Length: 471
Ligand SMILES: Cc1cc2nc3c(=O)[nH]c(=O)nc-3n(C[C@H](O)[C@H](O)[C@H](O)COP(=O)(O)OP(=O)(O)OC[C@H]3O[C@@H](n4cnc5c(N)ncnc54)[C@H](O)[C@@H]3O)c2cc1C
Ligand code: SF4
Image 1 (tube, rainbow, N blue to C red):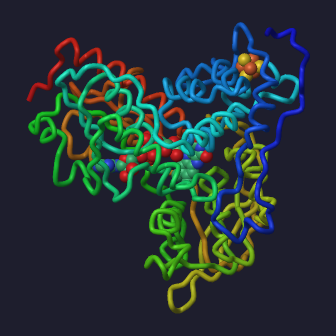
Image 2 (image 1 turned 30 degrees about the horizontal axis):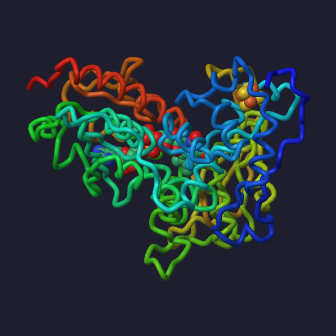
Image 3 (image 1 turned 60 degrees about the vertical axis):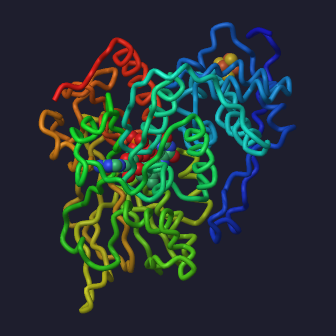
């Protein structure tokens, strides 16, 4: 087949739960393709000789080949092709921003109907999950080298999987009691079911990777102690999970949460199933979520599901500048979330018990573009006014946790607190690599995976050439 094949511009839609129903439950919003829908969508692919879609994939997936295998009903081959480059397809198929990556570059994007690459990838992963027993990929003979991976988010998991397949003995150290990083504690169940994350973590363990949970590196065990325990190299995939605040009066009132705490309570600690699980959370009557990214959308949609009467997203720029995925903004709107654009909080007010009861906001207008290229929001003098709120969630970004850099002499950081690393993830310390949000600041799942993969390739070469830590 070639690009001259007759174009079919009817992109197959993916069925979803109705908004009225889903705003009251935590079950997955999108149902995924049926067999027929997946084959129909795969059949639209032109099998381009120079597949532009692949240029947009940070892990180098052979997109036309896995689509062809789905079209031909050869699902084992589709799984093999996908897993040869991506150890987490069920996750990527659900949360990757394909619309600005592979799908944006698909030749059919110009006609407004790119192939639904993410949905097909999800279909492949879900098909494999439904089978009994998974195929184990080829694993190279043991090298006798040991690698410690700190952090079990997408960067750490990918790096660990790649190194294990290259024959190295890998142990992941994770601070929390569950593996997956933001995938498990941040992104809600209705967007990414935790069963999917757990099954992909199990797959990585099946490659021979050991996982030590509840292990905060940098506190009781320092990096040099990992080397002393016999590890030859370390990869730091510790994310950038510390919350950033607005630094305005009243932010410490009860009922004002960082998105990080709010989402961790809801997702990791299962507060939405309180009292079956013993983590409580403010249900909220009138909730304000401050921010315009995916984290803000997730927080607002969780608040709806917890039973809030009114949920507002308060964003200081206009809709056009919102960094959240379009699909998630649309889902939030369908679920009844109200958007207050060009609005910024200036302080929170509390009652005599220290509980938030109101938020003062100021109206904004857009000025000249700032360093990010987006138009800078400017306050409209005298436009301050009060709005009632009983819960506020601050979702204005995150910063790296300083624990490891501050306890590791020689590990340099940038002025933003991220780790200094070269294009292969080499840090300023011999035998220590890093990748994902800890080097870029908050980014995406697939960019973290790409960084884990690049670092693994470089570490493999270094280990095979006899690289060793020097005390
Ligand atoms: C709510 C939310 C929604 C998002 N939605 C999307 C989305 O839809 N699509 C998308 O592509 N991206 C999304 N992102 C961004 C994406 O999740 C991150 O870019 C990605 O998870 C970064 O991966 P990582 O492996 O670098 O770090 P993380 O996922 O943050 O994982 C780091 C891990 O390291 C552990 N750790 C930290 N310090 C230590 C230590 N000292 N010792 C041991 N372990 C440690 C942490 O506990 C954590 O498990 C979202 C982020 C959030 C917060
Ligand atoms: S997904 Fe799009 S760009 Fe990629 S091979 Fe198919 S039609 Fe071509």
